[in-house]
Every structure is written in structure tokens, then in C-alpha cells.
Image 1 (cartoon, rainbow, N blue to C red):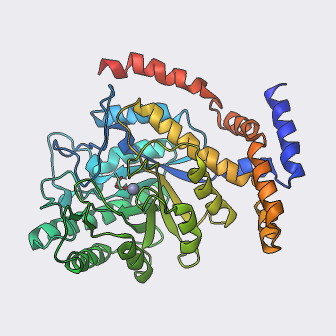
Image 2: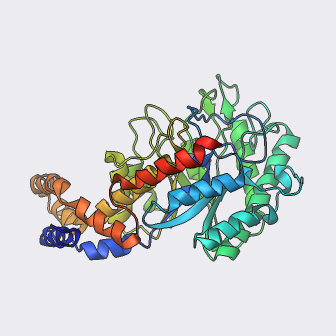
Image 3: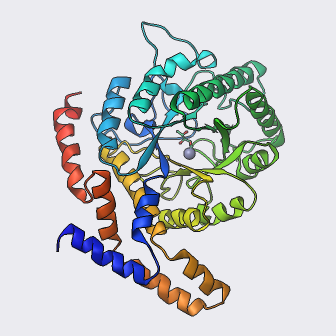
Length: 418
Ligand code: RNT
Ligand code: ZN
């Protein structure tokens, strides 16, 4: 059978179950997914020489890591061409590009330090999301930034946040696409603190000060990301789930951001999405793969990834959920890591779009749970691969693993020579 014939056959199988796969493909093409620049250089950035801090860790020393903005952009370009779908660029403030020996500290950064990124994004028709970088910097004092009891430290990081609000608005104006600006800090304590509320009160005040910077709420969507713990910060995290969720709920225009590596291992973000959608007009996600802890492994087409996608799609929330990938594996080819993760999430979305959600919901409402189980199991072996193949064909990328040959060649010709 030709690819076209396989697709036509698959279409019939799905149509019999009430699913329009043409519509699924058309819908998937319009869903923006944010691709994180930091997979390309192990979260190093360009504005400092020090180590990665903040309780996050990359492991591995696979050759070929990008060391300059040019290399990072070149690598990302290779990956982008291997992925189907609509992409957005996700940047961290530490990826500011200083030219001609100029350097300013993070409280002083300006739109011009990201002009090259804007050009890169515009040429590729991408919007940009942004993240202030509250880690890997000598002004992180005793592991604290926005919750620091040292007023000078706290002020510095508040100014950094405000600078990032201005840069986020610049991104949105330049690209014509809303910029999601995510606030995450690793602030916390390794061992049992004596005061758990004080740091949170300071954190709250700091975020309020950052958000007092004037900005257009249609152009910039500030988020707060929670976390349960980080390496070396095992006993207490200022930005806990309750803290960030309540902050977002009580501050208009601020979104909660859930990273599925940031909860206790038996909690699932797929179940939290519909809970939050009952209350928030919009939410944001960091899609990652935690292995026993917040390990940030490459996203795969696994059960929970599929469930997360399903919750977004079947609640008609594609326009209400901002999706960003967030992982960093330094032990494998970084371009492959980008590509596998992005393609996996695309597959999960396609799978969700090819599910007879209305029919399943009806069975649940009629308490026909036996049938629901049968049908949910049945659809698992539907020919999604043939629909994926057609989607990739329409997007001009390989549907199968043959894309890896491009990566292998690039590794041989470019990465290994660095
Ligand atoms: C860390 C958070 C945060 C970072 C990025 C680099 O645990 O997930 O989102 O991964 O900002
Ligand atoms: Zn995250």
C-alpha cells in the first residue's frame, strides 16, 4: 500500500469511531508549542561563566554542545526542520547576546540584547516566550533571590524581573505573538528552616513589584511556576504548589504554570489541568519527563504525556493552555533530544485529537463504564501511525526515524569538530 492508501484506510477506521482525522491534522498545525533554547547548551546561557545553580542539574557530557549564540541558533535550526507543527521559541534571560565587549548585569538588560533572537524568530515565523533567570549568577545569595532577606539582593532580582517584563513586551510587539513570561526561582533551604512564611511573604511582595511594571496584558502573560524541591534544596521551597497557585488565583492576569516534574511522584498534572481550568481562564505548562525526581529527561510518547494532551484537547482548552517543553539531557545528542521531545508531544496531541472524546464523555455520563473501558482499550491499537505519517508529509518532515540521519551527519560534520 502507498502512504496515501494507508492514510485513506486509517481515515475510514477512525471515521467509523466518529473521528475526523483530516480535522485533527488541520487543528494540530495551528497549535503553538514552545521549544526551549536551553536543551542546546545544557542550560548554560551566554551571560556568565559559573556553574548551573538553582537546584537543577544537567548530567552527561555528550560532545558538541553549543557554546555561542551562532552555534545554538544553527543547532536549533537543524532540529526545527525535523519537527512538524507550529513552533514558538522559549528563551531565558541568560541567553542575552552582548556585542562588542558590552556587558550589563541582569538588572540592566534591555530589548536590544535580544534583537538577534527576535530576528531569528521572525525569520522562522515564531513567537517568543521568555523567562527571567533567577539562577546561575553570583547575586543568588545563600540560594535565595526574590525571597532573600537581604534587601539589596532582593532588589536586584526584582529589577531583573521588571527588565524581563519590558523585554517580554518587546518580543510580543516584534513578533505579533503573545509572550508568556514565566517566573521560577529555586529559592529554598537544604535543611529545616525556622521560618517558612517570611521567605514566602518576601517572594509574594517581589512578584507583585515585578508585575507592577506596566505592560499590556494581552501581549504579556506572566506565570508563576511551582516546585516541590531541588537538589540541595530538599527541605523547603518558597515557591511551593500552594504558594504559586494562590498567587496566580489572587493576582489578575497572572497564570499558574505547572511543570509535570514538580510534584510528588504519584501526583499527575493531567488531573490538575481540568481542576485549574474550572477557575483560570488560561494556564501554562512545562512538559517534561521526571524519572523518579525532577530529572528533566527528554519527553517521550508515554502514558502521562498522552494523558496531559488528552486533558487539554477534550476540554476544548487548546486556546487556554500555553504549552512549553522543558527538559535538558546532556548525555545524548542535543539536537536529537530536542527533536524526539517535540515530536513526542506532537504525537500526543495528535492522539488526543484522534480520540472520540464526545462519545467517551457520553458513555461516562450514562454510567456505561464497562463499554467505556472496552472502547478506550480498543482505540489504543487504531492506526495512528498512518495519520501521523500524513501529518508529517503535509508538514514536510519525515514521519519515521529517517530524520536521524540528518542529525548523525550534522554531528559528524559540525558537532564533533567543535
Ligand atoms: C526548574 C524549572 C524551570 C527550569 C527552566 C530552565 O526546575 O522547571 O522551569 O527548568 O527555567
Ligand atoms: Zn519548568
